[in-house]
Length: 166
Image 1 (cartoon, rainbow, N blue to C red):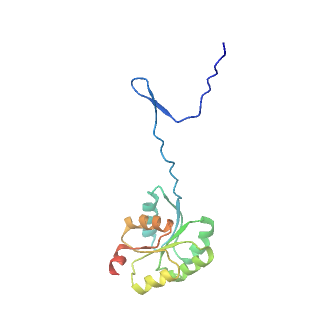
Image 2: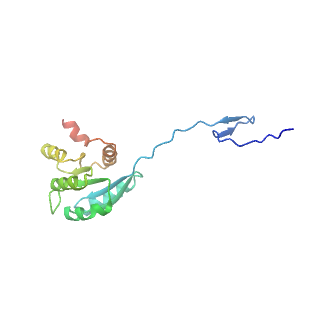
């Protein structure tokens, strides 16, 4: 008599029903993990900077990797922080935010989301021409995460209030 060797086959996972029948479990599609968003915050107001960091830190897809109060500090800190994106206030004490935006885009080609209380249409246009990937008015914290995700996914994001004007 020939011996039958039963090899365990690599197969689909099974579950047993109450009658002892083995039924294949549905295969779930492999979800691609979305790339984490590594944000560097440039904001001159300490309370706003800390609030942004705390708020963004609650989102599992967003990691705040550094923060600066001005342009000089940002230009020193960005290389070692290795962000994937910069959240940039336009009103900085030591240099204009638009100038800093231009330098960041030129040196590191990082996407920048401009966050400001100044929503002059000319300033929005200039920021976009200089390479900003998004423009948000302050006071819209829930919109920041949405904007960062959109920029990560290759979109240009404008604050809802700015879109309503056009």
